[in-house]
Structures are given as structure tokens and as C-alpha cells.
Amino acid sequence: MSTQDKPYILVVDDEPAIRELIQDILQDEGYQVTIAEDGNTARARLSEQLPQLVLLDIWMPDIDGISLLREFKQQEPNLAVVMMSGHGTIETAVEATRLGASDFIEKPLSTAKLLRGVEAALANQLKLAASKQHQVQEPVGKSPETVLLRKQAQRVAKHAMPILLIGEGGTGKRCFAHYLHSLGSYAEGKFIELSADSFPTDCLKLASLAENNCLYLNDVSKLDEKAQTLLLHLLENGKLDHCQLIFACHHNLEESVTNNLFNEALLYKINSISLHIPRLVDHIEDIPELIHHFVDQYTAENQLPYRHFTVAAQNRLRNYPWPGNIIELRNIIQRLLVLGEGDDIDEADIEQALTPSKEEQKASNSINYELPLREAREQFERIYLLYKLQQTAGNVGKAAKLAGMERTHLYRKLRSLDIDTKQT
Image (tube, rainbow, N blue to C red; front, side, top):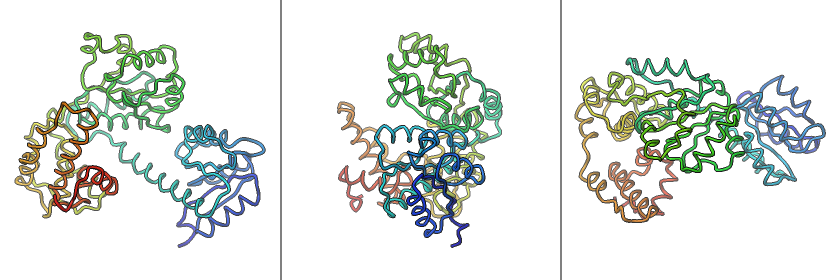
């Protein structure tokens, strides 16, 4: 393998012995490496050629590594940076991570520790790039509703005002938020998703998290009174002016205001620009394009054989009510691709996929709603995973794909629930 096949890495450290040792180790592994002894030299190296990874020491004579990290990430937001230090603190590591560092490696560096850190950072960078490319998908279809949605997104994305997305579950609000982010003024920043459960209760933490990024709050109606008051305070005091704000909910919030479940002043702050994400049944003419999109996506991502949906199959999908909207369509296409055997998917395959099995009907009615949440969740997970295993005749790999899980994660979950795959 030539050095051109390996990524280009910049090593920044003020100790000659350490930076030269790191250079030798990485070059022995085939990486292209350049070194810098201080901040000014590092800036020059970065301007000469953009590296795929920077190994950056915390302590240097002319500038500290945290300040240089902040500077580099502002200049190149997608740059992977691994911090190095022999005297790091937890606070320093947390600050570095907040500013976008991929990892924090403590000195003294062993060869194994160094290479693991480098490989993990580069692998994570590839995953993030692939994930961003996948997530930033403009609405698929040529229906009037979808065309209007694309035009609205292009018109409002760069505005400084918050954007409120209103639509049923499964309509694709999160994907549309990613699309708005890609078009907005903070497209180079992070896409940070929060829910009512993960919403920070500290003003400074929330403001710091949002700065120069896109903040997406999923189902804003579920925020408790304290979180609503905090969010309103930050909006009124301009603490969230330097970010893109996107909120989502399943229904108009006026009813929640009427029932004293949502702060009326907060509603006026976040609904200056409201976009309605249509139900799938309201743009069923987009289903053929959506099928094509999901088939291409899953066959490429999971190395699945390409299967063609016949015209009859597509028409059957167009005549289904889709209570779960686009997410339900995506899941059914995924299931048919994973479990199918022929080259074509016909109407009979669709009919079978849309008809709940006896096991599925039984499972949906067997949750004990009187149990505490944790036990009820375990009960549901057991029923759900047993059903997936029955669908795949006990094949854990296929079940993992259907459930949208990593195979190793599914194995651990099956063991924790005491499920024997040989008996399914």
C-alpha cells in the first residue's frame, strides 16, 4: 500500500522527541505525516494542506491546545482532532470534547494506544461523513405537497427566526430538519438533537451547546414547565441568537396552550415560521420515488441484493392508508429486502407484509400496562425481539437488520432478556 492510500496527519507537539516518535510510528504504518512544534507552525501546515486528522498537544509555548482546537474547528468544522496531554484534567477533556475533539489521549503514549486512537478517530470521521450525507436528504417526490415543502425550506432556512415543524409521527420531521440545517446559515456547525428527557436544565450549558450549531428539539410539547420557562428566558434575552433553532411537534400547540400544558408566550416565540409536514396519504403519488430511494439506500448500505417492486406491488402500496407514514413504508421495504428471495417483489409479497400475523396481533395485546415503566419496557422488548426472530427463523443477523440494531448489541440484549435463539 502506498502512502497516498493512507490519510494525511498533522502532529502538533512542542517536545521534539515526542513529535518525532509519533511521526516515525505513524509513517511505519503508512500514514502521511507532517509535524509542527507550536501554534504558528501548525497554522501554516494547516493552510498548506488540509489533514484528515490532527494530533494536538494541550500545552505549547505560544498558545494552549484548547484555544488552537477552537480556532481549527471554526476554520474547518469537519476536521478530526485528537488531543494529547500528560497533565490533562477531566474539565480539560470535557471542554475539548465540547469544542469538537474526537478523543483525548493521555501521555505517555504507547504505540498501541496511539494507533487505536488514530484508527478510531479516522473511522468515526468516515461514519460521521456517511451519516451526514445520508441524513441530509431533500424531500423525495414530485407531488405538489413535496415540491412546496422543498421551496419553503429553501426560502426560510437562512432566516434567524425559529422554525416549527408540525406533522404526525413518522412523516419525516427529523430528516426534514437535517435538510433545513444543510441549507441554513449554520450548516457547518453540528446538528444537535434534544428531547424533553435530554433537555439541559442549565442556561449556560444550553446556550453553549447551541452556539454556532443547529438545535433541533423533537416534540417540544413534552417539555415540562421548568424547561419551557428556561427556553423562553433564553429566547427573550437573545441567548440563542447565534444558532439555528428547529422545533417539532405532532399537532398544533394552541390546544396545549388552552389546556395550560404549554406556555403561550413560548408558543409565540417559536412559531414565527411554521411548516406542516404532510401525511403520506396526502402525497401518495410520491410512493414510487420513495420506494426507489429506500431500495437504493438499503441495498447499498447493507449489501443486500437489489429487488424490483412490480407495478402491481407499487399500486398496492399506494392504496394502503399508512398510519405510520413514511417510517412505516421504509420499514416494510426494509423487511421485504431482508427476507425476500426472488428478484421481484409482487403484490402477494406486499399483501403478506401488510397483514399482521397472529403472533404480531397477540404481541400487541399482551403488554401489561399496570407494570412499572422499566418492567413494561422489558416485556415489550422481549415480545418485539421474539417476533423479529420468528420473522427471520432465528437468524440474528437478519433480525438485527429488521430491528435497526447492531448484531453485537442485539446479542447482548437477547442475553439480558434470557432469550434463547435456538428455541425461536
